[in-house]
Image (cartoon, rainbow, N blue to C red):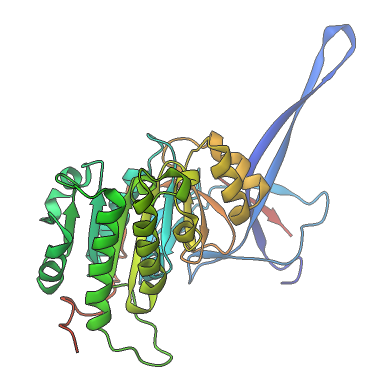
Amino acid sequence: MKAGSADTYYQIVSATIDQAGLEEGNASQSVRVGAGQLGCWETERATFAPIDWVAPAGELVEVSSGEGIADTPPAGRCLVGQVPNSTFPVHVHVSDTITHNTALIGVTGSGKSYLAFHLIEAYLDAGIKVLILDLTRQHWQFLQHRNPTPLTGADGVAAWLAGDSKLAIHQFANTTGGFPAATADFAQKCFERLRDGTQLRAGVDVPGRLCIVLEEAHSLIPEWNQVAQQSDTQHVNRAARVILQGRKYGLGTLLITQRTANVTKTVLNQCNTIFALRSFDQTGLDFLRNYMGEEYSQAISTLPDRTAILVGKASSSARPIILKVSDFGNRWSENEPPPATTPSPVAPPAEANSAST
C-alpha cells in the first residue's frame, strides 16, 4: 500500500512514564508508548488489512474509537469482542477454530471460561457437535439451556453422535483409570465414528463437525513430566495422535488451561489459534512469545479481566490483537444465520490509534 492513501491503525500495547528532574525540585514527566500495527480498516470484511510501510516520523497521530464501525461479523464468523475503548469488532472463523485447534490460556478469574461458554454456544448455533470433558463441573450448570446429554463413559459416544443432541458433557464422576486414559478413550471413539462416516474427496476440506473441549487440559493431556503414573504417557500420546489426525475429518479441540507448561506440547503446538488472557507463568509467557512477539507477550501479565490477546489462523486480524471480550448479545449477524456444516447426526460407517498518512 502506498503511503498517504489511507488511515492506518495502531494499538497501544505498553506505556512507560519517564521522569526528568528540573530546577528547584520540580520534575517533568512524559509517557513513552509502544504500539502494534493493526492496519487499514476494510469495511466489507470487518477487519484490518496489514500494511508493509511505516508512517513517517512526526506524522499526526489521533485517538480513534472507530465510531460508526459496525460490529457485525461476516457470515461464518463469530464475534468475540472489540478492540478496547472502540467499536472495532474482532471475530473468528468458527470452523477454523475447530479444525485447526484453539487454546484458551489464562489464570483463574481472567475470563477464559466465560469466553469458552460463548464459543461453545457459537459452535452449537452453527450445528456443530460439542463434547465437553469437564473436570470443573461448571459447564453443565452454565449450559443447561442447551439440553446437554450426560455421558458416563466413552461407550456412549456412538449413540450420542447418531442422535439429535448437539451437546454432550462428561464430568469424570466415576473415572477409575485416570483422566488421561478417559480422555484418550473419548477422543478415540469420536475419531473412529467420524472417520467411518466420512468420505474424503481430493481438494475438499471437511468443515468443523465435532469439537472436543478439554477443560483443565493440563490434567487431561499433561506433559510427560507431569503424569501421575507412567501409563498415562501412553494415553496422552494416543489422544495426541487422534487430535493430529482429526482435522481431515472435521474433528478438533478447544483446549482450556491455566498453565501451558503442564500441557503436552504435542497437542498445544497444534493449536493454530490462541486466546491469551492474563497469565503470570514464565514458561507460558515464553511459549506465547513465539506466537505473538515480545511486546504482546509482555502485556499478558497486566491484562484486565475479560481481555485477551488473539493470534492465529481463525482470527479476523492477520496480526496479534488485544480485544475486550464481548458480552455476546449478538454473535451472529441478523442478516446472516449461522453457517450450515456437515449434516448431523454423523452418518453410520460406509484501544486503537490512527495515523493519517
